[in-house]
Image (cartoon, rainbow, N blue to C red; front, side, top):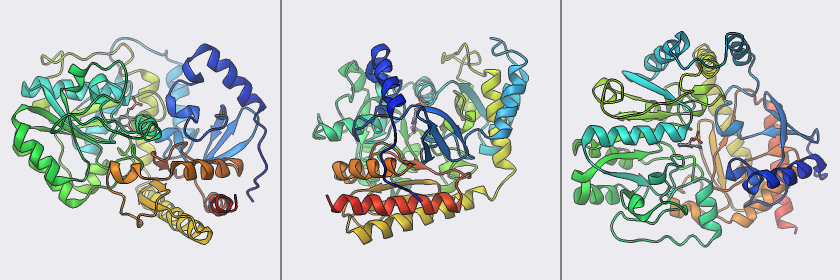
Length: 453
Ligand code: PMP
């Protein structure tokens, strides 16, 4: 049973102090620093199944799964063994190898794209897909949605989600509107001239998208979007918005689905498979690499043949197609294909988690609003009805102080939740009924503790 005893964090504190002396903020990716929730970030020593173990030896039931890759749990034997086998043959060649062919065959067969190119991260995948879209169409503008996050390439750090949304809301959340579709960068170091090439529209607002397309569609190379958003917290697209996305293709604009989070997670064919979307290009990351650094982008041959060396759009990578990463990805996709019932089980578990959170919060009189689809879930601290949070603006109204208090209550009870209100959690097939019950018991206590302060 969960207990609220404060865990020992001596080792994590010492490591955090040393880390801050050698790297900005002590972390290699901002959300890990626990800025918006406070407290000492736990330095993780190892992970197995659904459990993270920190440097002080505390165990946590993990709800982030490395932000997505660990859909079948940490330290999956099939992935571990495939990596060890590949390791014995050398770690990088700078020349092509069979594993790249095998993973390319698996991805094209499963997803239905004609061609795929492997890169090393989700950021590289979206950055490369956008360059390709510009090269293919000869147009320079791109369009993205508020609160969607597509990695940290310059032109994408405009009204971006994830850690940038966490910071923006903490800073008062005032957005700097400069006319139809125009917006200011979300990060220092992004020249206004770059940001000016990125038009922004509201997610789930088909009329706004149609208006922007009418005014500027002929100049736009691509519309990039998260088919289900994870990076503003979970936002689920309305059918009318999906229809508006398909209308952009009629204007000769490429539709780029960013499935870095949702790919191979919401179904074997991702969110686009689940929702019946037909994008021109798709970006992947996370699961496709089995937890090693891999991203990919793909689409129909007519477009992908513009990529070098076949076409004029340059894109390269010393470690792209790395044998260890390809081996891990192959083992992961193989394991998912071998267990077609896994998606239904993940959905059942996560739906039970959603219902249990609603019950626990309601018993404690804490208003929450849950969005859940498949193994992705966000419990917003908001009095909006469940399922009604649909846009960045809706999500940004959440009570982030209440979330931070609840997050700490969960952590103290051995439950590792996403350390920001504006992130999804990720359930894995290693989560059992015992994990579910322990998580819900801790959640009910943490909700109750919020109201007795
Ligand atoms: N796109 C989406 C939808 C993401 O969620 C992320 C990262 N969470 C990225 C792109 C960037 O991927 P990476 O962090 O591997 O660069």
